[in-house]
Amino acid sequence: MKYDFDKVVDRRGTGAIKWDVKENELPMWVADMDFEAAPAIKEALAKRVEHGIFGYADCPDSWYQAYIDFYTEEHGLAISKDSLLFCLGVVPTLSSSVRALTEVGDEVVVMPPVYNIFYNSIRNSHRVIVEVPLRKEGDRYSMDYEGLEKAFASSKCKLCFFCNPGNPVARIWEKEEIARLIDIASRNGVIILSDEIHGEITRPGHPYVPFLSVPGSEKVGYAAVSPTKCFNLAGIHTSAIIIPNESVRAKVNRQINTDEVAEPNVFSCVAAEAALSKGREWLRQMREYVFANRDYAESYINSHIKGLHALPGDATYLMWIDCRKISDKSATFLKFLRENTGLFLNDGGVYGKTGDGFIRMNLATTRANVEDGLRRLEEGVRLFLLDR
Image 1: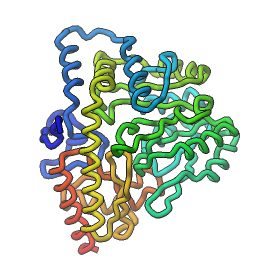
Image 2 (image 1 turned 135 degrees about the vertical axis):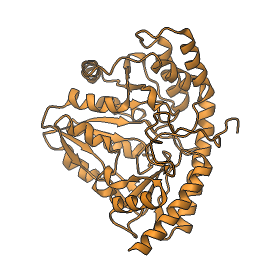
Image 3 (image 1 turned 180 degrees about the vertical axis):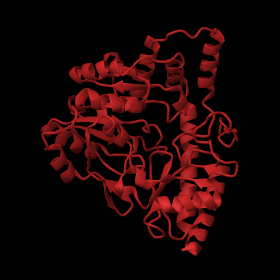
Image 4 (image 1 turned 90 degrees about the horizontal axis):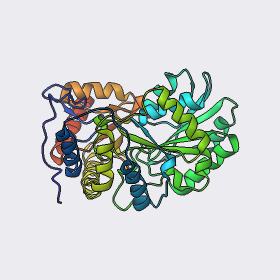
């Protein structure tokens, strides 16, 4: 590989949320990577710093073109400059969209187990959360279309958050599945917001299906995209919203400006443009490394750690692990695990009730950390079962 993903970078003492832990602890929880950013990104940022003046910034034409070229060349998705809006992040997009497209008391659908901040974005704006849990058949999750029909038919239902690909379930949704979701939304007048922040983190040879690439999607929905997950830029705060529908775009644009999240900081566009236009080879190699980690971890857990089952997945660097055979209260197990081994993972219960009994493990780190984490997990299970 051209890029060294085995390189150890000490993140302690840098203000990193992920690594704000005790000295003996290994954090494999929050969704950011332990890899240095692509050289092209560091070079672009260094050049901007060298300029030495950091006044108010705006998105240049080259920022728009970087998104247009990337989605055209990587996904065959044609997007226009007019359809693109800048936003400081996907989470601000979620929260602003709730306020833009619904009223207090309206219903917003989520499909758990799903990204926990979906709940916060709805609840904090005094809207009603309607859960339509994903169906789990063996190791595979699917959408509950009958449940969606019922939820969308409500006169109070105005919006649905769609996680594409699925976090934490690591599903790449197929074109036919998305088309069925679009059909139900279209017949019931519900808008779909597709969160595609994990879209570029997929198994090599298995690209995700952008929501807006499916026929009819532009009439009922839009997408929130960002290079922050796939290029490890979360702290820079940069994303885009792709909204082909002019009426919806006007409402969302007005709200993100009202919420003061529509203006970039001086590094937002610089980093995104460099990533999308010059970081693709780094991205390709990162995928290879992460999914080798994922395959290694899945095999290790399923063959060495009795009582746990790692679900297969073709998307995200987040492994979804079933621990119900040792405890149906994953929070209890994870508290024990951290206290006794120092391994810090995510509790599946925060992703909705159907996530309880599962844990989430971040594999976007060095192979050495993955091996260490798996040893700690194995030891933690052994001690937990002895303690019962």
